Length: 414
Ligand SMILES: [Zn+2]
Image (cartoon, rainbow, N blue to C red; front, side, top):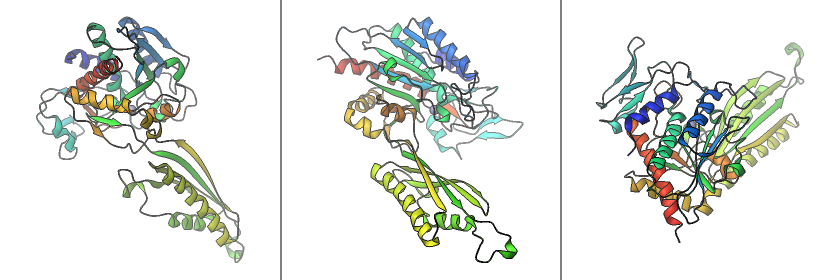
């Protein structure tokens, strides 16, 4: 078992470093302050005595904990991101520790009357009697994903001080800019040198994910014709009315607010319109590859149909793929999920296996040649002031990482 106080201390030392990313930036890392976290981690990995500790010019941190067995074991990796989301402020984080949580309301901020309540966030009830770390109500916490970083670091420390636990080479990777969708973009899979890896970036204890959306973005452009309204008869073409036709022709119930589980959707997330031109921005999501392709075709056919109906070519659509369901890459190597599942059961956790309604860095990495399921880091209510993490869940994540390393070495003995 990892030392609880050491883990808390490490977690707090990480979340109090502001490392927010910025989607408007074109550099990597997107914010200079992310270097503070990257450099801190490099220094600590060196202090641990790991091999090949490196940081590249884009602040990707990598290191190796060499194996301690004689036989061949595949190198496996553990990956987390050290940036925090730009959705909510991550400056001056002031974490609050609540020991022996009583299952009642937690007052985060008395002056501003900000309360973390199990009446609203019922998951809190799972953690009665445990130690919770929360915000002070004015910032996010940054457990996404400094919980993951903490857990990987504590697992490495634990394995170093327990050489009786046998494992192969373990590769450690810490990335910038995951929250703005770029965490995997400059990840050097070859240099990393793992046969497979796990991102430690899920939420609730037990989560194990190897399915995510296939994702595309679509921009529909509709050109109109502006004429003085007093002289417009038979001449003016209002692009906004054509846009309305387009919007209403897509299935109204196949939207995020009407779907769950493995159901896909079209999501209109932005409209800019004038008589002369209207732009619609959609995202298209589906776990099933065939359905995903069909959704893209539906959009293209709708554009063609409306052009025919209006006897014009004023409507066009640009569709761009964004990421794909990692299941396609993970299923042929399903033992990597089985090992994680077995590890959880061995440390007394009931695995929660469910499809992600989104993407992870692991989905991109899987298509870059590094199959990479996602494992819980333990936090809840990411990206806002109600974010919290139970310390006991973090301790369990450390145990899962250690157990995965151990089981992998055992499975390759013969
Ligand atoms: Zn995350």
